[in-house]
Amino acid sequence: MAETSEKSLYARLGGYDAIAAVVDDLLPRLRADQRLGRFWSSPRSIVANQHERQMAVDFISASAGGPTFYLGRDMKTAHAGMGITAEDYAAFQRHLRDALGKFNVPQREADELIAFVSSLEAQIVEN
Ligand code: HEM
Image 1 (cartoon, rainbow, N blue to C red):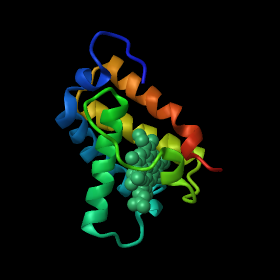
Image 2: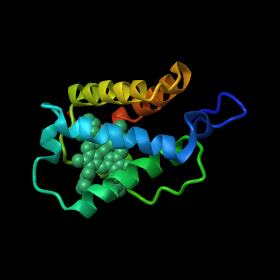
Image 3: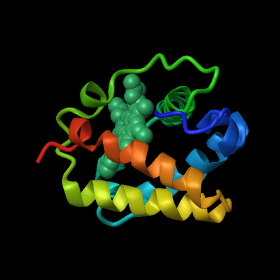
Image 4: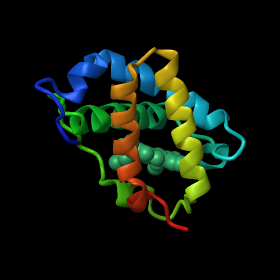
């Protein structure tokens, strides 16, 4: 993710806890979405959900320039076979924007995170 000031996006977003709060707001929105719910429709263990949440926090934090190591899979591998469509991806982005809005993340930082997520679309969308 491009650095556009002396401070990383990670720092400008408010650091680890602020990013974790956005992820904790975002994931239930995705699961509750009529279109996206199918990706989480089979019974999942608590640890699987916790792992997914931790991976999301670590990935975003590390990508935003934070002092976090992301130990998960690359985005193409992590989502391969799910059949995520461009419409699914647009729905994801709407929920992300809503979650950022809920925490009053400033426009510039919100736009940078949305742009970063947009840059991943080609790796995640399959059809
Ligand atoms: C419509 C879009 C998306 C859908 C439906 C989706 C769905 C999922 C699901 C169901 C998993 C869990 C797989 C499992 O437990 O085996 C997962 C993992 C993950 N996703 Fe997504 N995802 C989407 C977009 C994104 C985006 C934009 C990011 C990054 C900002 C992301 C980051 C991750 C990470 C870091 C993991 C964990 C990978 C690992 O465990 O190695 N996802 N995703």
